Length: 144
Image (cartoon, rainbow, N blue to C red):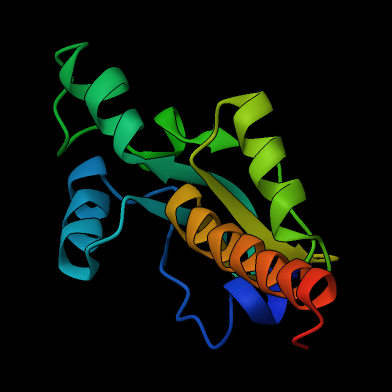
C-alpha cells in the first residue's frame, strides 16, 4: 500500500520554526533543544526558508562567521522546494535524492503542515515495502 505524506509520515507534528531575524545561535539552540536538524524559517504564517545543520557547518563554521551576529535570513535556503500533504512518500524520497536535500517542508497551498526528513521517509518506505511483500506472498501462496 502506497503511503502519503499526511497522515502516514506527518501527523500531529509540532512545527519548529524561527524568524529570519533571529541569530544562527538561536536557531542552533532550538534545534538542539528539540533534537532536530532543520527549522522552517517563517514570517508570520508564511514560509520564507529552511535552516539546517548543513547551513551551520558550511555557511557559518567553515567560513568563520560569528553565530551570534549572523542572521538566519542571510544563510537560510530561501523559497525552499516543498511537498504537498497528498504526495506519496516514495515520490518525496525520490525528490530528495535527486535534489540532494535531507528535509522538505510540507505545505498545503501556503499553509505550513510540517516537515519531513529523509529518515522519516526511509522508515515509511520500508514499512510500505514490507506491506507490499506480505500482499505479494498472500497472493502467490493463497494465504490472504
